[in-house]
Image 1 (cartoon, rainbow, N blue to C red):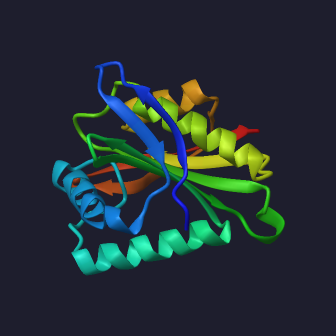
Image 2: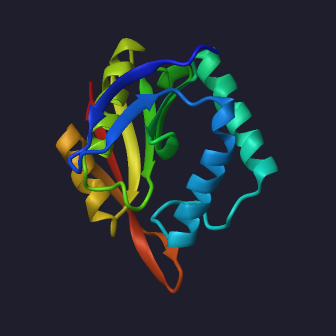
Length: 180
């Protein structure tokens, strides 16, 4: 698979960011990335640190899915390190016009415009892929992410009460969608 550079830009804090497709040589960066999110207690569905072997399996499958055209993926790189990852999984059959979006950004790289830029690229690439609707879910308590999604054009379309277990509490899972 040939690496694709979507765009480069300067974050609001002055750091240079490159948005690109992932590559197998990113394995150790992705491992550090996901484990840092787990250690932080980030509002993602992954709860346990992962191993290099499990991350290699995940990355290999992701790259194969990108190659087949089943996934659009945008990784954010700063100073040679993966600091964010996002994707849209394309629907199948009667949902082939729908994409399911996910995004995560490492602590220390949030609130500087990286998420907004990643969302813009995902929306552009989803349109090019012929999608008509993007959907995502977010923890109701994750106001930062919800704000980025709303800024990109997503609107809340539903909510599942207490769908997510956050330690000793339950939070709603908010479903959001955007027509393209």
